[in-house]
Length: 185
Figure 1 (cartoon, rainbow, N blue to C red):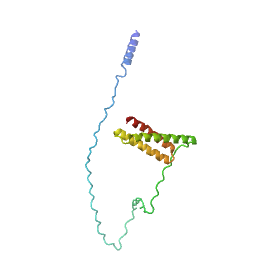
Figure 2: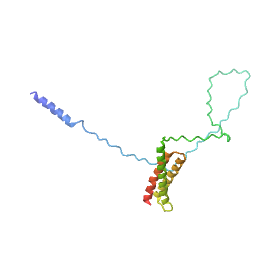
Figure 3: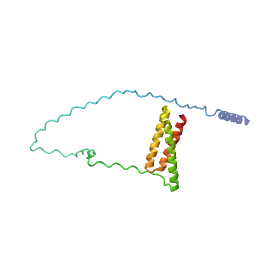
Figure 4: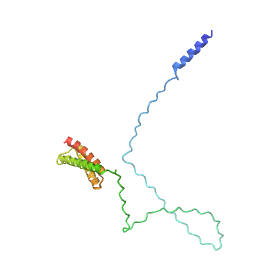
């Protein structure tokens, strides 16, 4: 007869196990909020009116033998703000020196290879850009031509500064873009 309560207990435990925790709650993400853009024209803020300066009452004549009032600790006035000194035209500040360029130290062999690669890429980019001169270019082609010319100019400046690694990188960018431009012509 003990079996009956055992079975009821097991049946009850199985029912609870199958039922779980009462239900699953599905949480959905909130829809994206759309805010209205601020109005293009903002109303000007009203200018606050400044009250007229208060007139100081006339000072009474000093009393001959008036007792001195007790001394109270005086408030310290705020320190004056530091203002930049005016610059004389004769004492113009010296221009800041250019930040130092950090470039890798190359061996003589690597430097020669870098110079060769930079000049070859620069020459190719300039030749491809010259093909576009005198042609009617669309907006994309004009943008590419401007970028190529910019990279070429920066590469020449890097060569003048004796920064051959940077010159090679810029010339390579110009070459790749110029080949893209050449394909669209």
